[in-house]
Length: 175
Image 1 (tube, helix red, strand yellow):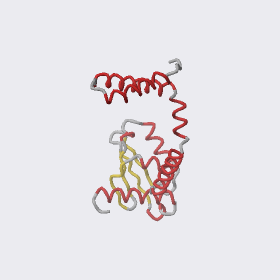
Image 2 (cartoon, rainbow, N blue to C red):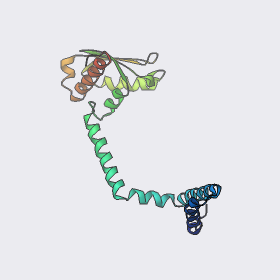
Image 3 (cartoon, rainbow, N blue to C red):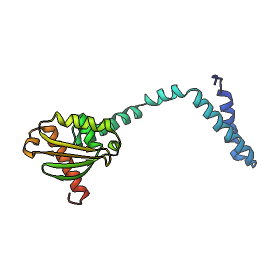
Image 4 (cartoon, rainbow, N blue to C red):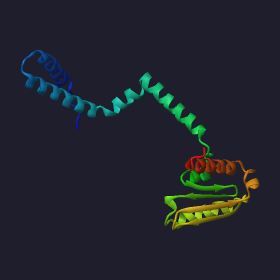
């Protein structure tokens, strides 16, 4: 849409809306108000990029954005999983069962996905702390068996074990 000057029509519609508040002809007030709203929308559409830049540069937006990012960072720091590929993988699964040395997780993404199954198995094959990892693309289940004392030596795996244990206990009502 070409940028045409809407200053005069906007001013006329605004003045008409205000003036018709004191006139018994309410239909005229509705027409002026509708015209003012429509012209305002067209004007905002014409200058949408500039409007977004101006709004982003206001002290409130700058402070609000900074505060939101600070809050997000604080919450991310509270997450029990490490920000790694394995942490993201485990975090996307639903912990279902835990006993020391054995944990079971479920993932809808794994169902029917042979490529993901191979990636999971390859990752755990590289972990000497893991005795065995089994994946089922039929049920979306991942079973990980390990020696708990060796698992605790790896900080990332220890955090994952604590994450799974906590979530299973929460699901069972034993926080």
